[in-house]
Image (cartoon, rainbow, N blue to C red; front, side, top):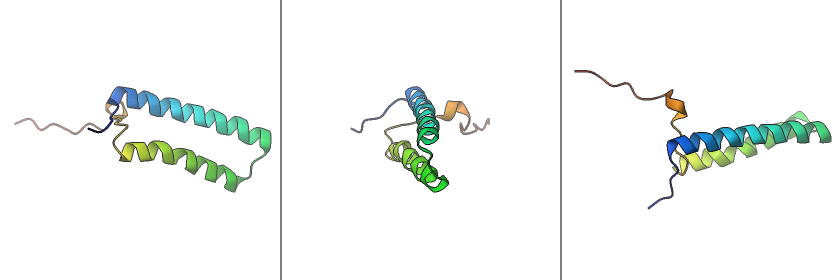
Length: 74
């Protein structure tokens, strides 16, 4: 059995991770004076973690119901 997180908690984890990493990047990059290329590398490396957890089906976001499949009424 795989370890899976429910969709609602997955949404919360992804949103909080995004906010925390954005805060970290803004704070760190302004203090250190990071170049554009370094900023892109930091951003890409921070996005790889939640992306890989979604691909491994550990995180199961439902994107707040925005992309639910349409039901066909017969």
